[in-house]
Amino acid sequence: MSTSWQKICYVSDIPVLGARVFTRPTGADIAIFRTSQDKVFAILDKCPHKGGPLSQGIVFGDKVACPLHNWNIELQNGCATAPDVGCSQTFQVHLDGGQIFLHSDEIRSLAIEP
Ligand code: FES
Image (tube, rainbow, N blue to C red; front, side, top):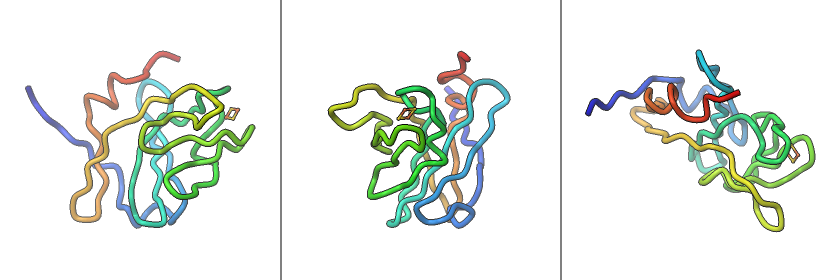
């Protein structure tokens, strides 16, 4: 089984408490978030509620508030906090030398349906 990681950008390319969008050849974009502690998370850029662009939300702690209806989504697992329910696809993140990598198999295969 081959393991291949695709370089996306540097952590420093993402503003603290901000996000950057990675556009895939197929499937919805991936939002890559940076927290105030420089933790990095990757989630499908579609809110589990009605598909709002999470990359445009406000990051606080390890959560992002969706810009459309303010659901709070846990960056770790892509799931809405109670009482809301639903999860967005998450992607593994690998950090090395200040650079962010996503797994090419996941980029290619996860949540690619429109
Ligand atoms: S689309 Fe995100 S809260 Fe409604």
